[in-house]
Structures are given as structure tokens and as C-alpha cells.
Picture 1: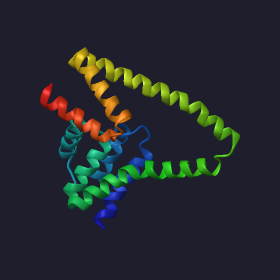
Picture 2 (picture 1 turned 120 degrees about the vertical axis):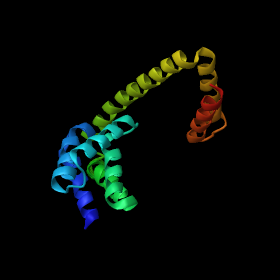
Picture 3 (picture 1 turned 180 degrees about the vertical axis):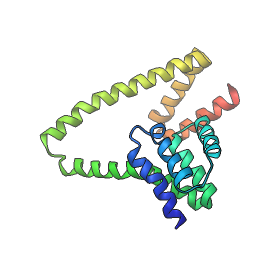
Picture 4 (picture 1 turned 90 degrees about the vertical axis):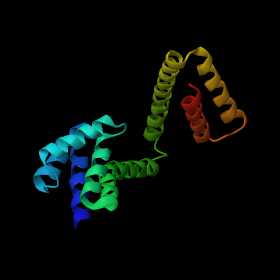
Length: 175
């Protein structure tokens, strides 16, 4: 029964908390502190502070921690799953609708309009990474990482995950 309560404590705020983790924090606090009494307000604020200090989505970190404190590792898994389940369900439904109507001219036009937007967003992100890298480690190191990455991925066909891991090791040990 505890797992069902953990699931509901994070699933309901995930559905109602439009706007992501920060919008669902008051709803999670209501469930965890007021409804189920798993934590005090002070404990919840400490969990919130810890979640804010770590990288990644706030809601999933809080769900994992509170679920773990409440019911161990299965509770953490239940809490995290309940947090991502509303988005997961919605994505599955939307993909199902897109596949059902994939031959529709309106859907084809919509995907044609979305592709350039995604390309521009990825280009802007790549440019920001380049500028930050240039400012942080200099022109030579940035050019070396770009060149080696290009050769490894495009010419030797090494999986990008291995290239990223290699770049992390290079930066961790040599920079």
C-alpha cells in the first residue's frame, strides 16, 4: 500500500503541476507533508534545498529521495516513475496520434515547419557550447577537441558516447 501512496503523491502533482518541477513543488509538499505526513515542513525544505543544489530536474530528485526515505530503493523507483509517468503517457498518446495521421497533409506540413526550428535551436546550443569552451579552455584546446571528435565520429565511426567519455577524461586529467 505504501508504494501506491508514493505513486499517487508524485503522479498527481505531475499531472496538475503545469510548468515543470518548480510548479509542482507546492503540490508535492501538500502530499508529502500534509496528506501523508512523511516529513515535516523543515525536512521538506531541506530536501528541496538539496534538490535545487544538484543538477537535473528538481521533481525527479525530490521524488527519488522522498521515495527512498519512505520505502527504500523500491520507493525511490516508484517515486521517480510516478513523476515522469504523466509526461511519458502524454508522449505515447501524442506519438500514437502522429503515427495514425502521419499521411495527413497537415501533419506533414507541421513536421516540415518544426524541423528548421529544431535545427536552429541545436545550432544556437552548439554555438553557445563553442563560445563557452573557447572562453574556458582557449582556442587551441577547443579546436583540438572539435577536430578529434569529428575524426572519431565521422571518419572512424566511433559511437558518440565513447567520444564524449573520452573528452570528459581528457578534460578531467589534462585541463
